[in-house]
Image: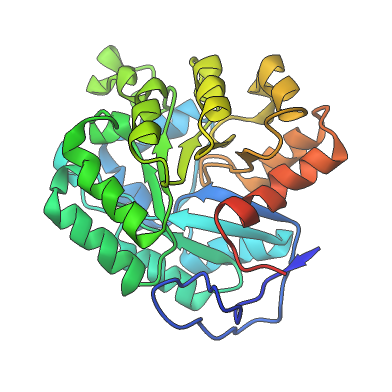
Length: 311
């Protein structure tokens, strides 16, 4: 098994000095590349108006947990959680789940958490400044899930290119939600949320215009799975995670490609707290996946793609 190495030269805290370990080195069996805080700041704050309907969509109560409770849940299972901030203040009028909170999570539990920045793309120059602060001052590792549906923007809109330029300059990745969403699901008019924003084809333009930018497409992009697979195949700088859906919903075509030509481009993620790691992994164990591919998906690909300091 890999072992957490907080004293590696290329620390998870890219912008500063490596945080000192408080716990004994943890044996790492998997890296969950897509999680959100289970705290009230995210569930009751950033998602407040829509959180109950989203809980119903995932058929779960999704209880509020503290930072320490979330850390212990992951620590017991030997899983590292890449946890991201979230900011849709401009489009939804809700408070952000701050990058300072994410940095505090990493500081308190450096053996379990890796921090990604949450950025509101509509904040323009302020968004670029916040990204630089999050990486250089707070020590976060990249840009977590930009959510085109909730942020109400098209990724290939050139008004947002300065944000991608800054990501390239800083050498960090950017992640985009793709496919449908539980947000507004089953409500009249989908609560005003438009699915078209999250078609992966718009990310294809970003990959062309920023060939040195590492791009993560979050989720299997249902119902545009084949569209996403085409982009991940064609663009060397585009990768994907398979979070947000129980593994039983992964298509046969995706699994076939996972076991063959895309085995180095796909990463494990849950979309916690909406799906717990135990539930996701138990489903993944039932799929026909080659042993060497399973190892890549659960851990090795994340280490390589996200440049994580594990040994």
